[in-house]
Length: 67
Image (cartoon, rainbow, N blue to C red; front, top):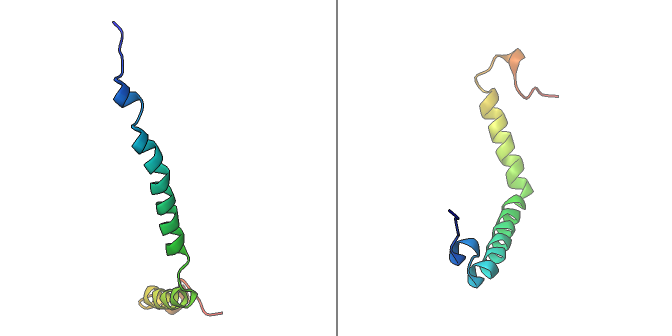
């Protein structure tokens, strides 16, 4: 009893071999574009989130106390 893999399952098609690195490169480029966002927008978002998180907390129990 020997188990044999078909050649199509053991080795991908030549198209698959060349397309995969391109897809990975496109994905990495997309992630880099997301990470390189606008710094001003990030600061505004943090200010909004900080206010929203501290809004209903007691004065002495703020998550982001004023310095």
